[in-house]
Image (cartoon, rainbow, N blue to C red; front, side, top):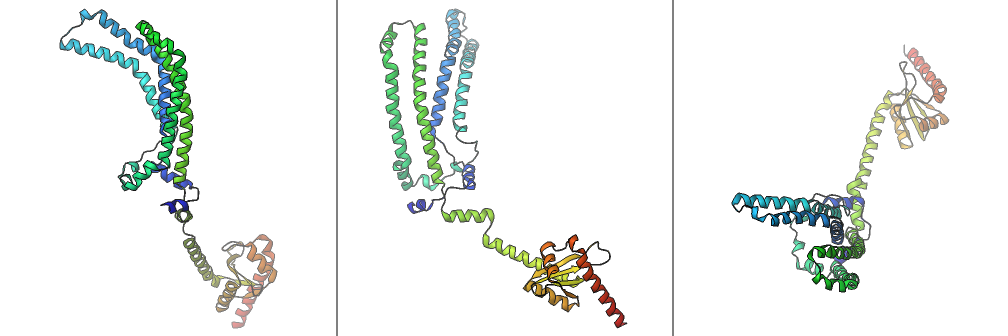
Length: 357
């Protein structure tokens, strides 16, 4: 296992990271979620504490003031329960919705929305003693222990720093009227939570980068994995080379099959051969085949077998080979030179036809 980890020295490709995302393997810091929830709770408490207290206090005051009017039969108690329930929901509905949104935001800010059942599948590694030992004493476990120890010390220091100056005030809470006690406790709690949020922000940022680095390192690849992925995405180079070779061979066969249809073969005379076809219905001669060295020799052999004239013209053969593609008309700048050759070939054929008659 250690050797496998040491072999994985290459950064993961985007394809590898996308596959991990599809499987639900994403960067996730629980500290970020915790920070969002506590920050949301602090915001809710500082913003809605008065409305929540008022929304619940007023129905209770009315209930106590008009307790003699409450019906104690089944229908009356049901109506009373519904009234109190509506009042509680109306008071805490929006704050709870904000807390839920904070919890969702804590996940969404770390990674995009993922729907995958891969993490729910049973895996032997989850019950393996070796894997369990690694989880208990591995790098992640040590990081969690140090993180927890830091949080315990830091939060303890923050609580002392925030509450110690108000220690005398807290002693007087025993003698304060209950109506004045709630705002005082709320103010101290918000003050304490704000300090906790500031400390946990640093913890969440550090933990997120640690979790990202751990996740990134876990998906690093070996050179062999890089090669395999390249083969899968781009194709095996050997196979691609073989396919390209077969395509070239087929193209050559099709081209050589067109040589018997040529009107003339222009050569240099050894290295280049260009086969041109022309009849009066064409606007210009067309190149039906061309080649160098062995292919040029093969074109000349086929031309001899089919009594196709072969004309030696070194500069024209080189120029046509470089400028004209298969099944394309020759360039305009070569019209005059090619016209002279084709005219010569046609006159030669007419002369041979006259001799045969």
